[in-house]
Image 1 (tube, rainbow, N blue to C red):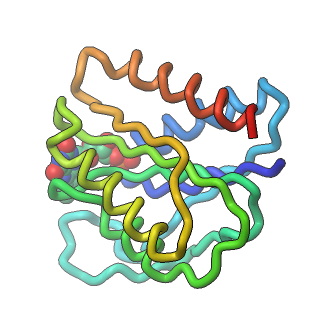
Image 2 (image 1 turned 180 degrees about the horizontal axis):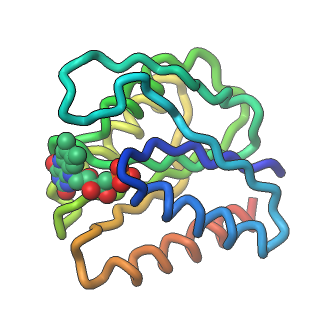
Length: 158
Ligand SMILES: Cc1cc2nc3c(=O)[nH]c(=O)nc-3n(C[C@H](O)[C@H](O)[C@H](O)COP(=O)(O)O)c2cc1C
């Protein structure tokens, strides 16, 4: 089973969680490839529209874990642009997580996850499990550990 970790990250938080997930899954014997969704205009303060310069191919994988930051109480525009351009999905199992700066999931994280579910739902695909990591919460490490265990258990049972 080939697992793709497809990440959008600007300041590195989401990417660092992706790296931990990769190591965790590899220790359990999975093949994991981490790839980043890249925008030519990465500066989040810029008003320029998203221009994706690296668009990972979904159909290279059996399982895909999406990771993205929360922006303006919703999903990052870069991950949104990526999900919008997906054409076909063939037999892929999805997981997703977001990282957010504020301490509670309702401060954008839940909405970002809902948006990912909606985009994949439009392609008749569903997300098997999700996580919101609150970067300024005391529970951040617990949230990450919980996600590592839940995702790897579920992937192990596929
Ligand atoms: C322009 C901008 C908008 C943001 N908006 C939110 C927000 O609405 N809610 C929130 O909790 N965090 C917000 N954040 C914080 C990021 O979601 C958080 O720092 C995240 O972990 C960054 O991930 P990254 O390091 O992978 O880019 C925002 C950050 C930026 C730069």
